[in-house]
Image 1 (cartoon, rainbow, N blue to C red):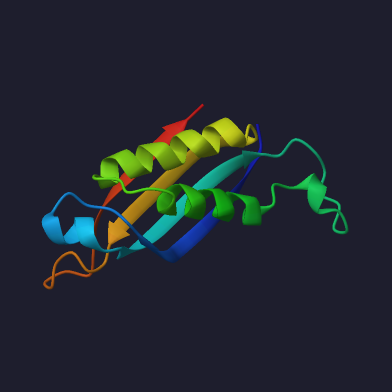
Image 2: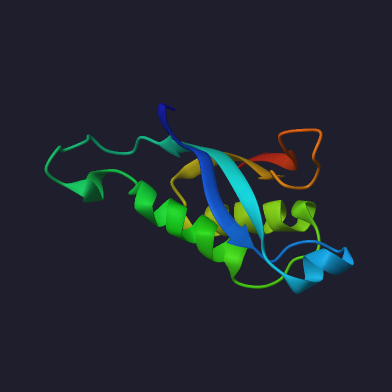
Length: 119
């Protein structure tokens, strides 16, 4: 089955995440990298966005899921994002997401979790 890959690099947002005392009091920046392999079910018509999966909808779902409520663990958040994408977008055949905290440590660019799932 032919697929097309939609990807996001370093989608930046502020989220309420973490289990440490200072993380419970304030938002912190997250960077999200994601890839979605989409079933090519129909021919692309350049003047009709309905012939492709609109990546604005994927972005909106990611941002909403990451900012809707406090989550303690990156592992939990990554599971929630992937679950939502696979539930709401049946044309997504596989998804990979990497969520990182760029401010967690001063001695590295970021720390995070990567999760991949396929139908």
